[in-house]
Image (tube, rainbow, N blue to C red; front, side):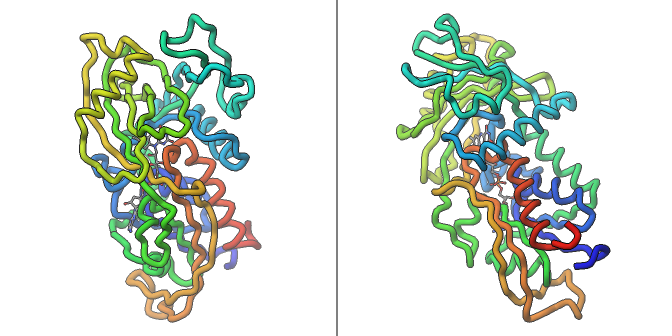
Length: 362
Ligand code: FAD
């Protein structure tokens, strides 16, 4: 493409990944961006996508991996820079480990700020070892609409539509266009893709209001084979902050219904770390259930070329074509960590698009 012609980019999916990719790509005037999605950022009660249900903060998950370290470091720093806007808050944090863990070797020691090893007097009664640091969190209810408003101001279009096949989505981008596939769990059923490595991890949480519960805490997230993960995340809200208590971590479980038994278990496990949760002034604001869009083998951020007929209602008569090549950049499978990887992963998508679309102008 020449310098003054623009490339049509269709982003399929309006969760935190699709929106963040759009935010990064829309800084480049060469791209004309349209977001096509079934669930939109304002659909904050929809259990058909993951993004409304996240904590959403940076917390240690998995083990060291250079690429993911980069995505998370980028996002952590970006969220940190958002603190003055009120979209993000920093919280003191304590993460607890088994006795004997080599705490000085933890992979994220240089990713977070103010990392230190906790003294025995800083450990709740049931915990043997732990580290402290500062983490950052956002609140999906404010953060997703903020991303959308930024995008609208830059001329990004939003089209509500459920797409059935990958080809149909690619055709929306037109000949020589770009499709970013940010469909989360949708990647499992999108015909022509049907990535069977994609699976849900059910999460249930309890949102409370108690200003005394202001610290991020969690126990090491290793296998979660019992379907439990224990974490406490303070996140920004109009009156300062509220706190989300978690949670369940149930692989291959598609059940989006509320379980009172799960809620009771979450409150008990979290109160063992932060006893103030049991104070009479604690108000329970709501109970949430969401599905994390995970993938065996980890997130997929990868480009491929798709040859397909490109015909759609947005193209002029002359532009309709039986033959076209669409660059598809996949960006799905972020599981429990889509927020904390979002800015770094979006930059990688941007690099893939830049290098393959307009090599002469990049
Ligand atoms: P989604 O948010 O699921 O969005 C997918 C989009 O694709 C939607 O717009 C959907 O409508 C659209 N779509 C799918 N298929 C189609 C189709 N066929 N046609 C049209 N549109 C389609 N992450 C963190 O980083 N930190 C946390 O603290 C955290 N806590 C969490 C706690 C819980 C309880 C849960 C459930 C998740 C948590 N997560 C957290 C994970 C995070 O929510 C996800 O990783 C992230 O939201 C994934 O974003 P996404 O954009 O990939 O997918």
